[in-house]
Length: 104
Image (tube, rainbow, N blue to C red; front, top):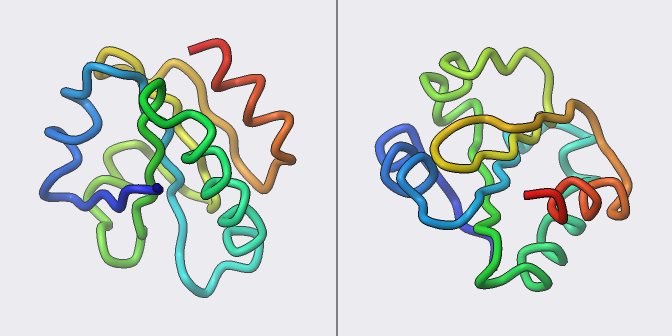
């Protein structure tokens, strides 16, 4: 299941996570974000227990988006050990995201 992160729990849920984390920065009004959403849901099920997969709404949580210089959405960050190890901007196919997840 996809988790929903916020400015207030990002450090605890993402940066302090003992497993790698994939974070989808999105907004409800964003067309490409809506295209990626079902893929993110599928990946959350497939990688359960191995990678924490979640989303953060940039309109509701501007501080975290600003902290990571998210200028375009969707932006997906791959975080391991509290550090960003990879990032993609824009809607990517499931296979591309799986490749990135498998490298974590």
